[in-house]
Image (cartoon, rainbow, N blue to C red; front, top):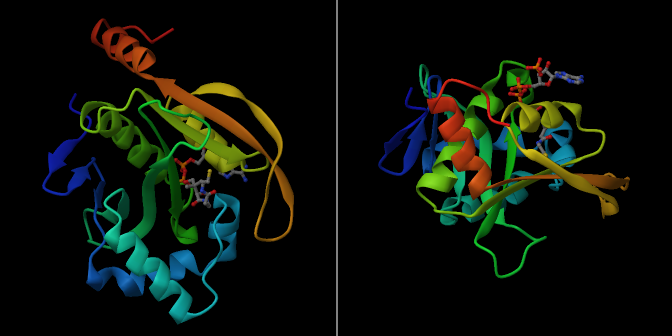
Length: 195
Ligand SMILES: CC(C)(COP(=O)(O)OP(=O)(O)OC[C@H]1O[C@@H](n2cnc3c(N)ncnc32)[C@H](O)[C@@H]1OP(=O)(O)O)[C@@H](O)C(=O)NCCC(=O)NCCS
């Protein structure tokens, strides 16, 4: 089964479209980036004013590694997804991912669906050799998303980061290497799960 369909400027899944941000998305962007329960677990500073949200929005609009997560059926923007530099690796062709979903959309499998498609996109189109992701130790939802998408656990960095609510967190790190990605494809093609 084809996991995603490459569109001009976006990636399509069964229920979602991940595409570049457009000016018309600002109204939908604000409630996502203003919610501390969404932003703080993701390691981002919540926007505490329209001005702050506008600055963040302009930055995401200019960044071609940042995507709006859109419901295909309604066109509603429900989240953010981005590729970014992998701060734990040097001189390696790697990226890491970050994502946030509006709170009323949690628990419906949307981010698992988005991340699965973006893994394929990263290896097939962006030609990365390593795709990395991490979550703070208490972020069980993100942990499940990462596990369901087949990332390999690397280890825990204790006291990795002081979050925007002042709490010091351990960072739980994962990656997929190109060799694992290829093995997974081959195992799927042969009808048995990857090792
Ligand atoms: C992390 C986030 C993107 C998850 O998106 P989502 O679309 O809700 O994820 P899914 O529905 O695919 O999966 C959520 C999983 O967490 C599980 N879950 C839900 N609530 C949970 C809880 N309180 N404790 C533990 N697990 C929980 C769900 O059961 C599901 O796992 P399952 O499929 O095995 O049942 C979303 O919660 C979010 O935006 N959080 C704030 C930002 C953030 O943390 N970003 C990630 C930074 S690393």
